Amino acid sequence: QASAQIDPAIEVNIVQQDGAHVQAGQLLATISGDVRSMLAAERTALNFLTHLSGIATQTAEIVKRVAETKARITCTRKTIPGLRVLQKYAVRVGGGWNHRMALDDAMLIKDNHIALAGDLRTAIAQAHAHAGHLTPVELEVDTLEQLAIALEEGVRLVLLDNMDCDTLRQAVAMCQGKAQTEASGGITPQTVQAVAETAVNYIVLGYLTQTTKALENGLE
Image 1 (cartoon, rainbow, N blue to C red):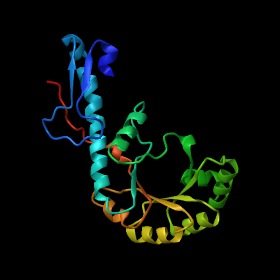
Image 2: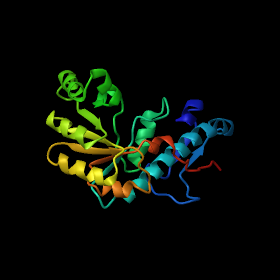
Image 3: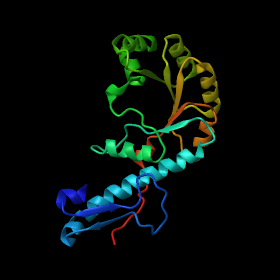
């Protein structure tokens, strides 16, 4: 895309498709055309390629760690301004799933919303009153006590925030047949498998798009 914007006459031949597993030194694509145009586009094109390949690679590594469970790995809206669509695409290429693309995809009730509403039950009631029939309502909970109230009020998707694995197991058991569960907060590559083994439905990881190491590529 960067090459085409600078010089539409540049020809690009993609050798490895998105999602392909590649090794060091492997040819990804070839380009031909005016050398000045190619060098002008080089750094911008490589910046996108290295950054997004890094996201896909990191996502694939995390997905592999939970492959023996039913948990799905998802990203968040913690993305670089202007690059959300591309970064979330890279997560999908790596085998992950996308969380909300924008605020209006779903209503996620967090601590600040509860504080503004006055209490948990009021916040849930107000969300249900305004949500359309196709708009999911999700609640972030910190304790099992909050979770019990959420289930009483008919919440069908809960974000279990910063819970240890023992608490997560209890929460998942409470939600069986009543609500889907997402685990979030402080989850690392070292702990993600243990979290997945609690039987949560989704594991939400902001660092997939925030702290990714670039996968180096070059133009020769």
